[in-house]
Image 1 (tube, rainbow, N blue to C red):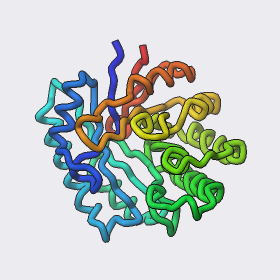
Image 2 (cartoon, rainbow, N blue to C red):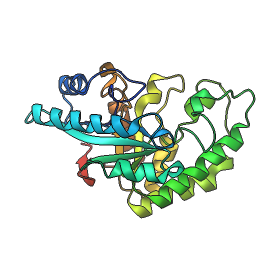
Image 3 (cartoon, one colour):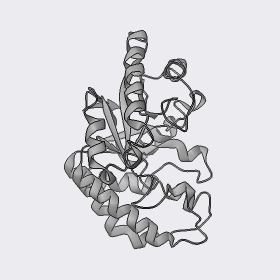
Image 4 (spheres, one colour):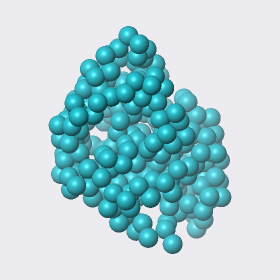
Amino acid sequence: MIYISDCHTHTHCSPDASDSVSMMCQAAKSADLYAITITDHCECNLYWQDGYDQTIRQSYLETRQAAIAYTGKLRVLAGIELGQPMQDLAAAEDALSMGELDFVLGSLHNIRGRPDFYELDYRTESVEDLFNAYLDELMEMVEWGKFDSLAHLTYPLRYIVGEAGIPLDFVRFDRKMEAILRRLAEKGIALEVNTSGLRQKIGSTLPGMDIIRRFRECGGKYVTLGSDSHRWKDVGAGLQEGIRLLREAGFTHYTLFEKRRPKLIPLD
């Protein structure tokens, strides 16, 4: 029996989601998940002006209350999706000091001085330049390293390839991608297999199989699974496919973080 956990979920404490922590937990229990980690958004570049300093604390409190309510039924873990930490390190440090978090996802939704990738008009953009800048800022994040798993690597492809239909020649980015994967492995940071792309036009996990396999070849040990659900109906969505890809890539375990410590869960 495989104990499946969803380590990337959003509640009404994220601006793009509306369901309560309790609803997400009930969905996880109904899906017979082993654990759910609540990872509400914390966009560091907008931390103070958009009130993330308050909403992440609300999320933390509600998640800890849910953990008590679901004792013996479901593991409920308190996490955070720390977006753009290099763009405001003071905000990132404040977020990380708010409580005893179980899990910190590091993510990059927009490069410095630009909107979120989903807001860009790719008819007027150089997608190669954008993706290069994305990889450069990711490497800065990895060197900083104060997170447990790198969320949805290749996030821009959700919009460049999936929505705009613009192909990218990945050979151009091989050197930078491999450097990121090797540094993740060296620092003991996990790579997330994000299954949200399976529900979107891109039709694949973020990242896809080639990068998942390459991470293992680079010495990567820890991989986390996340649906990136923003509503209760998507809790656990695609995780079975994520497990299949991990096995195919040669992994024998996925990773669940509790109190910021990795726990290896067998895939068989």
